[in-house]
Image (cartoon, rainbow, N blue to C red; front, side, top):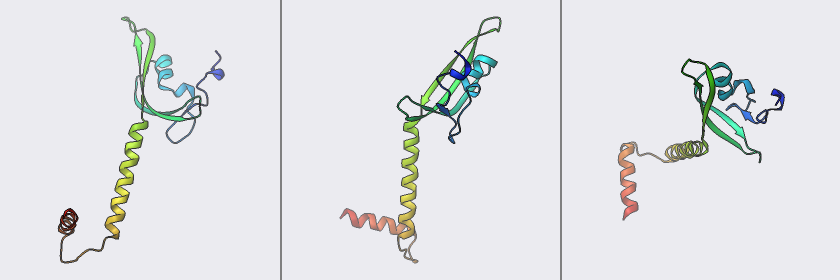
Length: 123
């Protein structure tokens, strides 16, 4: 297969959305240069067009005499992690908006006021 016909051309991106050159892929770097790459984030476009964020770790495989024999890569799907981060961010934004919209009693500390409201809702 010619390098310009590789099936990943135009389907692997950096986190910012820029295309990732084939020679910059962690597995290719391990195969060509014997480089070990750990924890690099990439985005892979599936055949249906959906883009999946992945964490890639690759290592070269060497013979006992040190010659490069191959490489292995591990891909971890980051979609759930990204969803949890989004939910956390949304929650923090919501709490911040609620706190800024809540009128505060200058005589009572904010924590005391919150505890009183919680008790009122329980009864």
